[in-house]
Length: 349
Image: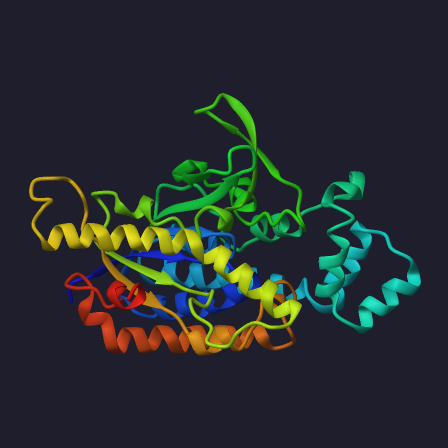
């Protein structure tokens, strides 16, 4: 059977990225699916790095098993940085009166973090600062970042000075660039990296502010036309947010979807030009769009669970991702290489 080559676009969204873990595990079960390239942001960059590093270990079952092992390791470690564990870690970074600490352990650590981050920053932790994601990436079973083997990998971060997106690819993809892509400034210090284009050292924050995820690296002529977006931020919510937390959650979702929607609108415009035969002889790729999502599940969650998942939520998200990918393969695998299965006309109607 001929290989079905696809590009993956992995959204960021904190712990909700465990949904993408389930999606990727299911896709790895299909030997006829070949992942040619991955573009990831934030949690999507973590997933993309684990997947690409594993697949770089070799063709066939060897690479797929290594990718599964990497993903399982990353999320087992992320699961440990939750509940009271993350509260204790945050207390070590932001000292607070003991009485207040006890209250925050009994009530919502997310609410506490939201209030405290308006007073303290990660820079207040002095020489004791560490980014726990660094050790997770370095200690993956198969830490082969930046290799030419396996799928092309792109991770995106936001330049703090300019507000513009920077996409790292190929040998540029390192532990530091993945940390930059996942750098929420309320939790982590900006990641500083040399930029050969500007000739200066630049600071970077989470890529979700400028591209969640970036699709344009996947338009390269040598890559397949099919782009499969794994959505972990709900596009729509029918209910009107009324409480302060609901309003803030929806603002978060809209902000982190804005760049993706702008890119999808541009793709829709290019598709219309192709349909009208106005791009004949012009090197503008007519990509085929697909999406794997579970809007019902994501509508049942909130932005707070992105930071501190409830017990069992990561497993629930992984299982939901597996089911969503299985549904996509049953219903839309035959569309790969032939037609869109994700209607941009319906999205922007």
